[in-house]
Image (cartoon, rainbow, N blue to C red; front, top):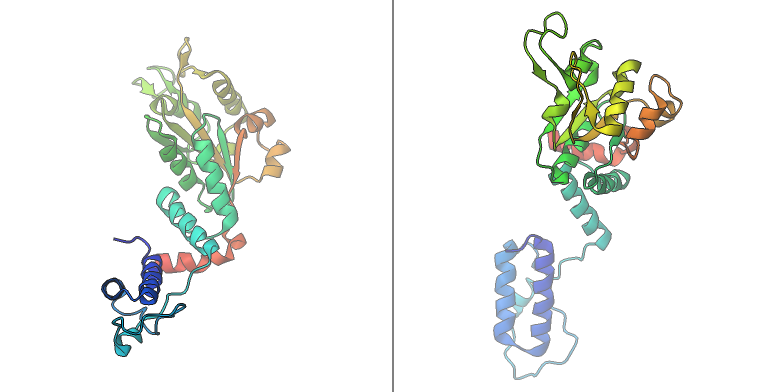
Length: 280
């Protein structure tokens, strides 16, 4: 079995030429048979090339058969490597791309996935930030679960309870104790999408958690500690983040130890046809 039929065809054609030069009749027929079985004759069209003299008394292939065979064109090595990287991008990251800057970004994401530093992913809405976060969790080998939360979809007054949990009676409506998402992601990955939607006060509390691994459930007087991998994402540009516009500068620098900026599709025009074909 050959994963790359083109490469296999090329190898058998090279063997065919070699056996033809040597006058090795049995091996020559075997190479031809494998070529015919491999592609049903699609790559067979021209006579074998002979670079050395052959013994006139040696049996040779009938002209009708020889004329069916031609050597498959060799693909440029760069295209082969790009094909492999593109295939890996789909298998590991569910990203349909042949855009080399994005492929390089995915390579960097793989390296970051194996570390324990926080990661901040920036990019416009729809660029695939969550796909990258989920792919990093799969590549990390962490035993815990992947827990995504969209900060923009949670009311600001509820985000602390959502992340850190609360005890019974902590506020009106808190009739039962609740485990927070931080704890649910223990030994796993917590993905905070649109992290810039957090209030300034909540950003400050989350910064403390990043620095110490400690947190406190709403209404509780003792600290808890948990180890979880944090990946955050925002559609705010890096320039705006560094200026502190709606985002604490110290939190930005703490999160940005690992930084990934996903390019928009308009910067990847070559991927448009791939995406259209995939969705069709």
